[in-house]
Length: 192
Ligand SMILES: [Zn+2]
Ligand SMILES: [Zn+2]
Ligand SMILES: [Zn+2]
Image (cartoon, rainbow, N blue to C red; front, side, top):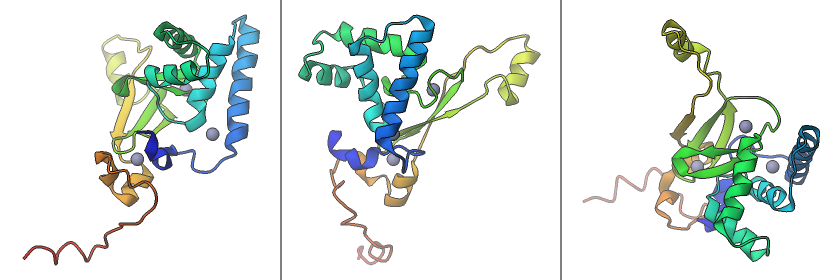
């Protein structure tokens, strides 16, 4: 999975100052925690940095592996507790479909996240939804129901995989380069 690093550049993050992006997200978490009287322990901070590093969803065990290597903890509860803290306070979100976590792109802001998940490379982009608006909201109001949260996890193909085709999904680690972009003319002459 990690050898497809090239494919993991998340949609919506195509080109940006990533070092600054991590710094400002961690700084935002810092500021928020201080204001709210929360303790951003080194472990919690490191987990946030790990999630921010690649802008992709990561499983708890993948994070635990990194913590273990860095000597920050080797027991699953270490990762789970840090993730729980980050999710509870809005610095990260859980992607139910992938059973994985992703750093929030709008930390501190109250928002209803919606996720666009690439089924080929598992890149995830966060966008916002307004569950109380639109058709769902109208239906809920008609039923006398007040929506507090709605999970929106859309799957499909990211811009990158739409171009290269979802061929990398079978793990044929060809992430090195666009070496075998079989032209459209090659396919129909093959069968005979
Ligand atoms: Zn970034
Ligand atoms: Zn968010
Ligand atoms: Zn993709």
